[in-house]
Amino acid sequence: MTLIQRYLFRQISLPVLAACGSLAGIGILSQTLDQLEVIVERGQSVWVMLKLTLLAVPQLFAVILPIGLFVGALIALTRLQREQELTAASASGMSRWQMIEPAARLALAIAAVVLVTNVVVQPWAQRTSRAQAFEIRTDLAALLVEEGRFVQGPNGLTVYVQQIEQNGLLKNLFIHIEEGERVTTWDAAEARFGRIDGQPVLSMTEGSWQQYSASGVLQQLSFDGYVFPLGPYVSDDQRIRYKTADLWMSELFNPTPDLIRDTAPRAEMLAEAHARLSSPLYALAAMAMALTAILGGGFSRTGYGLRIAKASAAFLLVRIVGYAIVAASAWNGWLNLVQYLLPVAATAFALRLMFRTLKPPRAWGGAPLAWWRARFA
Image 1 (cartoon, rainbow, N blue to C red):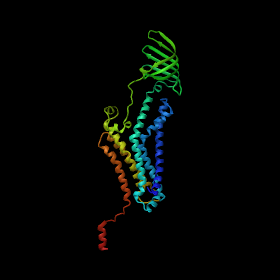
Image 2: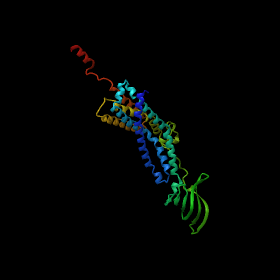
Image 3: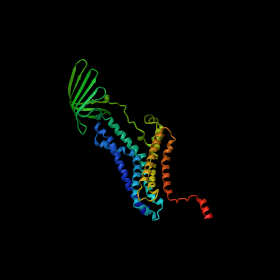
Image 4: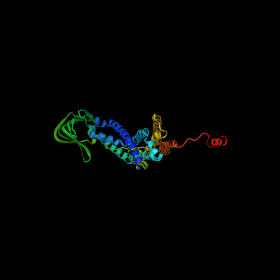
């Protein structure tokens, strides 16, 4: 790129990065509010909440980056046109293609980021997030204990813990089990969750055991240490179930019968795969529409509000229709081709409108009028 082109690239890139960063911040904030449940109800740490929040951001990039590119480009191009820097660049001998080349390079870079994110980063982040959420759901400490409350578990199990320390140590534990007419209770000064031979257990220290049988006999003993098996109270058939957003591209295009049975139909997976590959094209459409809004007409001292409003409405309409096509592609496979055609057509149409302004207006009547004037004038 020439010196002027590098200048234009910097002037457009900074507002685009700022707009994308602002939208990403809003997305992170919304995800943080959604993940507050893991702290309030699941007793997880702030780090786990932040981890789940950040892992959800890559899935939003396909939405955030094209919009941020469109908004940032409009801000930058409006300022450059208002200060007549684009007019000066044109007067210096730059062609229209040379003027839009920096913006096109930026759009291609954003499209490449979206593509890499959709193909590589998003499935990795989603699978990691799904595994973390599964671990939280099956966390015995979160399921069976809650500080200062009686928690009822399966098979007549009730657990109470007076205090839970940061290192996972349970203070003043009480366990109550009803099995028909037989009632068994444990109490311990301290306890900790663990595993022995792969089975979940609760290691208790300095406690006592009481059992009241149906015959009315009460048995009692004290212990320094006791390992309470939790296997009968934990389901062993739980496993991670992935969604289409969690799958790799190879799994979407060639799903196994197990994936089709547990995740989604094959047509829905194909729609997801083509949506990931086609969504980067909306970055190109966003930049083309932003350029058309500013460069698609003559210089205006009163501003470009009307042009910007038209371009914004057009981009919003194209993006909404794109989402509708993705949803419809799950039932009509031929619409997967339209997922690519729509942003490409929007880009081509916007560029056509922008370069049409360079052509001189044709005189009314064309060649017949010129012949008439030459013959009878």
